[in-house]
Image (tube, rainbow, N blue to C red; front, side, top):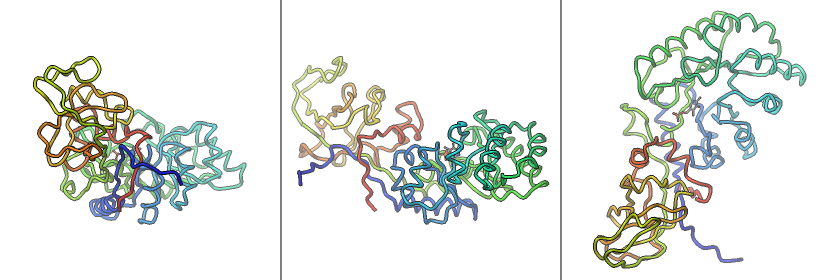
Length: 368
Ligand SMILES: *Cc1c(COP(=O)(O)O)cnc(C)c1O
């Protein structure tokens, strides 16, 4: 056996935190059914391990972004049906029909195509109607609902299993969100006057934590399940971030006063400074803009500032204030002390982008 060295940067993921968060969300939504959203490699936490961990937690679908992710869910032994949260290309639909995956139907033409594929393969395909309540990304427009009702009888190989929509501003604007909820409720009632619709779903994290949607019975939690609630709610203190990103000091040196640090020598020491190099860079998702924004890491009880530009695979920190600095020591890049929201705010972005930027070079280690 060749010797395998320990990683120089890694993410620790607590699967028990994810299960805990899912149970908090169940409590918060009082009996709603669950579609945990595991798209984009489970928001950077690792698609297969997260899906395997949640598969038997009393859920009905896994929310994914595309057929590639749906296939990975099916191939890793999960029994929960993948649900593709967006329109599918014509070339993708055959695979969806053959596997009984769910998708959001956005146009009547899509419905026609699914119906003919289902007819071809001699099956009845469960399908969800998507309605556009203001997101502008997909779904039937409200004034197309009468045409949908007319078309239903022609779709003899489709079974309308659900209706869904997506809120564009649930974490920003209460007034427009209430209007979107009213639109959704109206469409659900219209459709249900005609046929029963088992699943009605509107809310992602901000919606489910901040609003009541009495006509809905399924929610699609993403970011809050990973531990980062996007709006204030009484449940926030109960949610636990599941991911910690760590790296190690690769070298520690004393630099004299007036030494340049990193590309462009934008940082110059103003006194003799103990500088440690960290084994992670912007290629791993530690964004280059963070240096100028005053990023810091946590090491042996202290916050150490990032000095000099972040490079592709490494960056430098000032460890002058820390005792017993030792190469190889782990540092917290993101975790309990330097939080994902702090980093997002400094990078001028959102928690979702910080998490999904953690690169493929970072091994994910499952700690419990
Ligand atoms: C990504 C996504 C979600 C999950 O959103 P969060 O804000 O992370 O909870 C839910 N529904 C749809 C349609 C999505 O695209």
